[in-house]
Image (tube, rainbow, N blue to C red; front, side, top):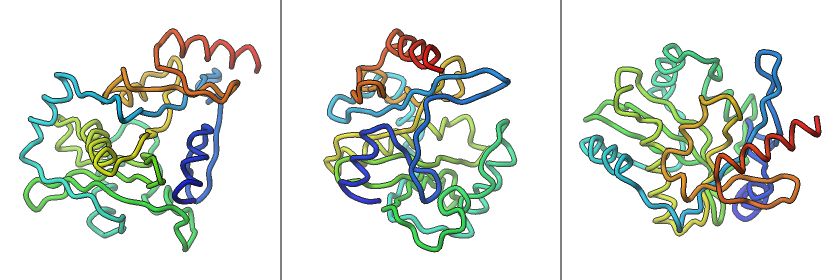
Length: 221
């Protein structure tokens, strides 16, 4: 699932899970149906505003390296620290979320590694297509929480994707009435698009559009 094949499935509202691809229209949380809205950034239209530029300046002392992903003991240890500190149910391991027992990675997977000196403080994992990237995981050292490293990783992926002349960055989805995923809008809400699976079209993001799509999903369930 690489190159233009990955681009195609992403454009149809599919996403990676382990070594497969899937899509969904809603989640069930606390016995309530919550509509799902797949997102992408139109990279040509991304412009970082004052909050985004301030975050880049605040983290300018950190070093960033982007390279083909290799799972190391250092990355495993960082993820374990992260998983033990978060207040939601995170995947049991990086291996499980990416591979789920498979021995061959069907995706072209890269990582963003952020370091404070020699100390690894954040990792963002993403897949390459021909014209797009898909963000798969972000995790960081809980002691660096104040640096908003999850948002910083998203911005680094955008910077890299634009350098590689990609057209789109797919960060996953947000969920109606469940703001935990709203951070995915942080890099540039104005350049965000939301998928309408009734028409197969990507629409300019607005909360009015999201609410209309959510109502349609609920009417059809």
